[in-house]
Image 1 (cartoon, rainbow, N blue to C red):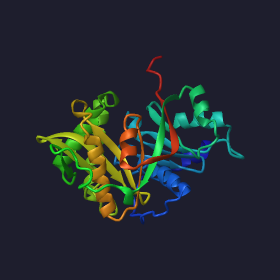
Image 2 (cartoon, rainbow, N blue to C red):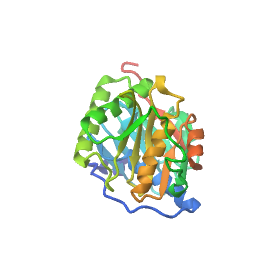
Image 3 (cartoon, helix red, strand yellow):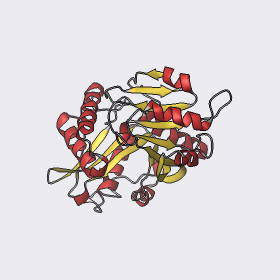
Image 4 (tube, rainbow, N blue to C red):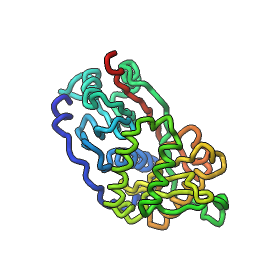
Length: 302
């Protein structure tokens, strides 16, 4: 991996439209979860230094922004014949990111099977064990059966103003994850540039983002990704003071109903512990797991 990973840096390009997936078998749904997650993680973001590493050993998205949310390893198959040892490959991967923090997602088909334990031993800290979930959108209740909270107004993000509200919820919903003001500004600028470039829509025409507001104040978000032919659910965030009112569930249901109307049959997501019960109530079921690690370089001078 030493030379091939460094030689396979390529520019991240806009995603093409992908036909909807319809295979509901266990293996197909499991594959859809993994494929959409990876496609979303390496999508075009228009960030400084944005590049992709895509080799048989590694799939990773890198940028020059100081945030693990935009520096990620999402597939690793290390220790293959003729390549470096697993430990050497891990060290080389860490060096790829320089002095930036990054996430390392260990998926259900990554190699070796004990990769997560090896990362932990190397100091790449395990943050969470995250279920990958999927559902058949034909099983989704329509809005007349499960109604959103009446005070919540949901709209597609199709202009700069609503995108600004979306970004505000994302950064303030989990303020502990967004402490670097320069990173916030760079991610917001890149998001806005891609939104304009794509007309605020996915390649199949579906809006990429939804914003929920109460009394005109943005309180909740949801994002969809269709790069693997499914409705991948991401960025379901509610600001702290508005939680436990059903807004996250309502945002998810609203986005999925639009996804179903657009012709998509399958929805996928990776669930937080807090959200799992909500997603199971909507109709999602677990089919695989991801182990999320984070590497943070030591402070300068240490």
